[in-house]
Image (cartoon, rainbow, N blue to C red):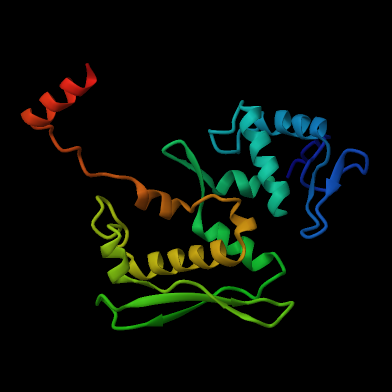
Length: 220
């Protein structure tokens, strides 16, 4: 087998030069330090063809991904692969947020408690974890099929609540748990599944003649 040539580059993910990168103390992941270094890293990343299309040739998007990665102590590539844009708003994938919470070192891995009768309205899931520093068990909001139906998640067009309800309950329960006890990990963003459930797929009601006349009168 022919040997491949080594390509020397400033790799922002492996062993960095001490003067070029700062290291996140919690995660021990090499990340750019100063603003100038982050801009350089963003330019470097934007030229890659293996990152998602939304980041290719877009240094500003790569810069945002690096900023997010620094704040949660994560690899920039992981952020790019798991930060989706839903109706113009950034959203984390649920599995990524669960992985971040499990790996942050402050809590035990998230676990799930199922209850009720499978397939019925009382079928539900509660996510929980333990705070390592105090030993306190932290429990999230219980998510049930009744909640999914009452909130309108179940009946949305293309809803995964009908095809994989247990997975959706676990994802939603974990999102509630993380947002309640570790909001710094979400950075105020919803998960992809939450954002999709927020999308209003109901077509707008046609305006009646009386409503149209009243609106036109008040717009004068």
